[in-house]
Every structure is written in C-alpha cells, then in structure tokens.
Image (tube, rainbow, N blue to C red; front, side, top):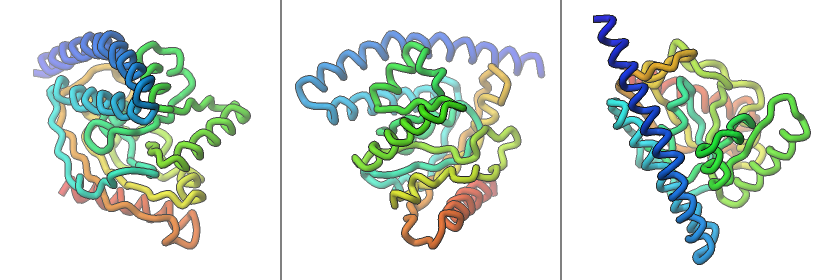
Length: 250
C-alpha cells in the first residue's frame, strides 16, 4: 500500500510537471503576447487584468489537475479592489497559486531574485508588476520597498507570508518582526487568509505531489488605523488567522 501511494504521487508529480511546463512556457507565452497587444490598444490596466485572469485560471487548474479538492469559505469578505495586502499562513509552494486562484486574481507578487532567471514564471511576475527581493542586498531591497509602496499607493494588491518560511507541521508560526510594517505605515487594509492542507500536497524538502484536501478561509479585512501600534496590529492579524485555522480543523 505504501509503495502504491508513492507510485501514485510520482505519477501525479510527472503529470503536473509536464502540464506545468507546457502551460507556463507555451500557453503562457501566448497569454503574455495577447496581453501586450491588449496593453497597446487598451492600456496597461486592461493588460494586467487580462493576464491576472489567466494566472487565476492556472491557479485553480493546478489543484484540479493534481487531484486535490479546495474548500473555500468567506469569499464574500474579499474587497472588490485594492489597495490591499493579503496576509496568509504558509505551508507549501502551492500556497502561491492557491491565493490568486481562489481568493483574488490581481496580485503583484513579491518573489526571490532567483526566480527572475526562470523563463515563464519570470514573464508573469514582471507582467503583473511583481517585485524581486535579493536577500542581503540592502540597496536592492530598498528599491524593491519603494516599488511596493508605489503599487499600494496606486490601488494595487500584494501577498505576504509573514512567517517568512513554510510550516512543516501545519501550525502557524510567529510573524517576523516588521513583516506587516508596510500596510501599517501606509494605512492599507489587510485581508487575513487561513489555509490548510497544502503541506500534504507538497511537503517541504520533497518534490512529490500527493492529492490532498485543501481548506481556505477568507476573514474580514482589518484596518491599521484601528490599532495604536504596529505590534498590536500584527498580533491581531496573527490571532485572526490562527483562530480561522483552528476553526477549519474542528
């Protein structure tokens, strides 16, 4: 039985890898090309909306094709537009397509500098006004922060995982100090999101994909202006996500 489970995971992994490459590099290239044409005639906003919609479709397809089921609650809490910072707990690399696929499509991604060298993925990050962060490079990080500020001031949306790393056990870890300083300083609303199950889909330090049940809970937005300090604000966001995570498991 154990052997059959591993074999199934291996087959699913190969299936997703092949389809993923074809989708991102082939279909993705066509999407970017069409988006550029739309941008030329209708403007940057329409271009971004079109590409975001396709990224959202890809996000949902990734879970359907992996044989996983996603249970979503609280969709009515999602604001119609930005500026907004989506804050979620982090369990797997699959959290990244999960949020635009099921919560909100038009996200400017914050990604590691290394991803800028990967064809396909880098196309979409750049097309959606994504920001690359190079750890240890203070000058580059300062420039990236200025770009994030600009995105939010222009009514954009970004996604943050304040824990800074994926949780192997599935429990929400402590938020890194200053991880929510951007929305707090700018007074931008935060949309707390609790997710569970993606750690079983793709475990940390593993490449095998296992069909899983995913739970996703979107909580009501909160405003930094309602808190006297950044610490209180961050603590409330943490408590909201933790409570939602526990509720999904009961």
